[in-house]
Length: 140
Image (cartoon, rainbow, N blue to C red; front, side):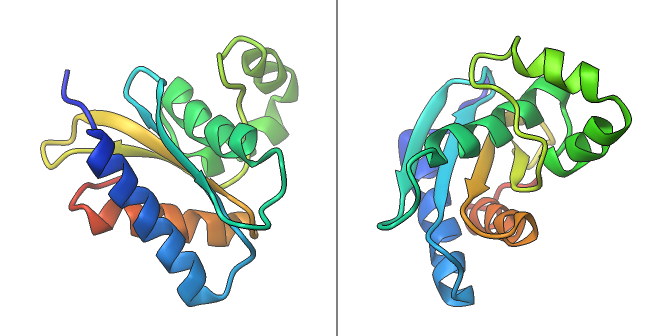
């Protein structure tokens, strides 16, 4: 299995946080997981609220669990709330059905992990996730 190194995870986080600063967003938190859903790295900006690890990691974990962006999980949650509620209790880091969680793929299209960003609007969180992934030459 291909892996995201700690250095790459930290670079993804740095780029995501930089994008948030450039956009003037609220304090963000970013979590990067490997393809098995294990946390590799997490950072929370000063003044970010206290549950940001759980939210960021839940966005990333949900994307991995269902193989789709957390934005798409939000749509499923509206159509099938009992399914998403039940699944959230079955995943080790929960599942947050809001944009900001994306699968990370290598150049060959293999899934190597996921990112979750939280702290601002879900749309802005997702923009920062994309920026982090693209900054290290990976794709979503």
